[in-house]
Image (cartoon, one colour):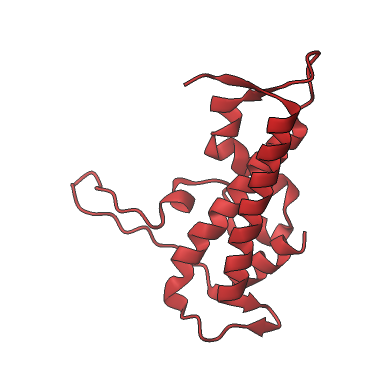
Length: 154
């Protein structure tokens, strides 16, 4: 995998547009599922909080990708050099960039920044004794609802 990729201004615009649309679609979906802090969807059972948290985490990370892309400047040939491997695709980098820009309520959900738990909450792995893992965390649906609301209103 190449470390850097050179893209044109048109490719940059297309990429940023696709990222914005993806983030918006994820947040809109979560808003429909969760409702808003003053109008919560009470029909959404708490059992889906892990699935919605995973989608939310992906939206945060993709937003970090957008922040990264917006930080790039054109070179002398009017192209952009994208640090593909270590910025564009790196989970931790994108996550940290996003958290610098997002409301404090979202930072509170990810107190320790990007962790393996944030990405693996839906995955099953084998622990050191070869037993299946069960990633758990405490995030209530009302907190997630507030985070989605705050992110959408950014």
